[in-house]
Image (cartoon, rainbow, N blue to C red; front, side, top):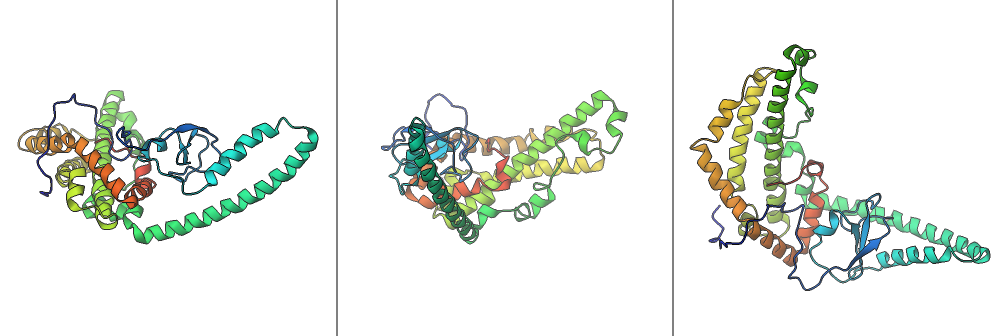
Length: 328
């Protein structure tokens, strides 16, 4: 794709590349900022909709959001005015419960009756919230099909590469019985390293494929993001997929020859030698050098289109992403 304009290079000190979706850095130039304070971890996170416990929680005194301190707090770009008072009510109840513990036994009896009433109200509210959540999920399935992407929807090539297949964490766990023992410790360790390399490449290919099929396609189809903006967020991602899919295909073919792989040295040598070397350098050179621009475009799109932030949040709940971290 040729959407991208000339990139403005700048001579600032190069920083370690972070994740585009999973570790958003705080934007110091924004006008409204969060005012975080420690909060009770009872209830659900307003960002990911999961239970706050057992992780610590924080509460924004400006927009009244209560979220997980490690992780979710860093995803929220802007601090907006509160849309409801449910979180404020929860904070008031938490504060009042501490004061009421010092009252007399007479007022304690009164508190018991009041607490029982509050509990029933909270239970009803929780059930109502659960019903709303289910309705929202049903609506999301038709609104954002990319959110519910499954392994068999990643494409025929991805299926052939086994991107959605469940595999053992170690070579020995999946090898024929007695093979590891017969090979000896040294050869078994070598096979473990080869197996780990293949699994790492598999997970990397899955990450790239999800960028294409889930994020890029979903942004254009459902979130009003233009093709030019998507290209600036994922420059040359199609080329990266082609290069890595070709590498994984060769590794898989070698893996299928025998339970114990003889060698992958020739495959790696071909991958990092011309002309493949030049293609990798060109694709990754542009992909990595445009990271700052990609983050700025993503922030701008989130500010202009509220659906985008909700779409990304929903995508992160997909099982394909829960144990994967975008490290490109």
